[in-house]
Every structure is written in structure tokens, then in C-alpha cells.
Image 1 (spheres, rainbow, N blue to C red):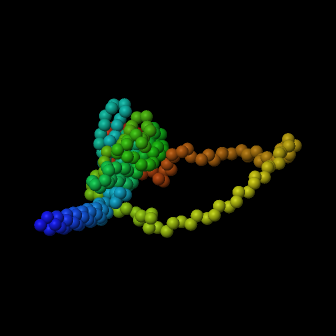
Image 2 (image 1 turned 45 degrees about the horizontal axis):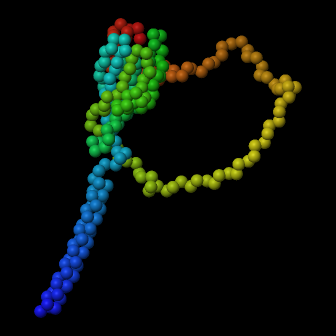
Length: 236
């Protein structure tokens, strides 16, 4: 009687062990399946990290450093507006989808008009709403910075992955040739060097200063904002 009971206990122990092993394998397989499924959903459903939205309007803030007054104004793509003595031309305004880290930037061109009605490009580059001081405008009287983009955004998908592109073949490096020392020039040989003849009388052509905007490229602003006044407009 005792032998039969021991035999039944041994059978039950082996059966329980096999059941526990099978349940563990099923749980592990289920977890692996959930992880793979979650990865597929993330890859297919979430927007790519380089996706961005292109908007038709950029919103700026303008500061008059003398009076301390700040106003907000809008500039459409490829539109030129005037703020004080500054003419601002908006080129493009990007933002990011809500599922990504916020980043709003714009490419803008800024020209200054002086008292002689001369135009000079003082800024051409990107402005970032999250970091206004990164590419700031340098002007003694006025300052502008990007606030946000406005209007329905056009989704620009991520560019093709660099992993799918064929890697570029790097040409082999050419052997470095030893440097040949140059012969030293004696004072007599230096005196024999031909010098250019002196310039004849007449005007000398000088290149335009950096930032100079020729009259053919000067744009007429579609709108004017404070602190421009009618008297200032007449002078300009």
C-alpha cells in the first residue's frame, strides 16, 4: 500500500514539473510576441524623427530698443515687410509634429535702410523660436525674433535612410611626396623681379562693401509696422 502511494506521488511530482515548464515557455513566447508587435507599431505608426511641417506664415516679435515697445507681426512666405528701418523677407517656416520634440525655425533675410536710403543686408540665415539668441539679429535700434509658425502645415516626410543607400567608394590615398625645398632668393635676384607699372590717372574700381544690396534687388515692402511713421516713410 505504501509503495503504490509513493508511486502516485512521484507521478504527480513529475507531472507538476512538466506543467510548470510548459507554462513558463508559453509566458516567454507571449512576452516576445508583445515586444515584436510593439516595435512594429512604433515603426509604422509613429512619424519619422526628421519629419517636419512647412507653414505659410511666420510670426515675429519686434522690439524698439529706444522706446522699449514690442509688437507682434506676421510675414508670409516670400513676402517683404518693413519694421522701422528693417526690411524682413520670409523664406520658409518649419515646425515639428506633436509627437516629436518641439522645434520651430525659419529662414529670413533682413536688410537695413539708412538715412541715405542705402540698403545693406545685415542678416541672412535661420532663426529658432526655442533659442532666440542662437542666431540673433545685431542692430543698435531694432531687434526681431521668431515666435511661431502659423497656418496649416504641409508634412515633409523624412529623407531616405542612409543605410539603404549604396556606400560611397573612397578612392585610395595617393602617396605623400616629400617636400622639395625652395631655393633661397638673393637680394640681387629680388631686385630683378619685374614690378607692375604704376596705375594711370583715373578712377579706381572698388568692390561694394559686405552686405550691399544693389538697386535691382531691392524689394518694396507690402506692409509697414511700428515704429515706422509717415514722416519717416517720406524720408525713405
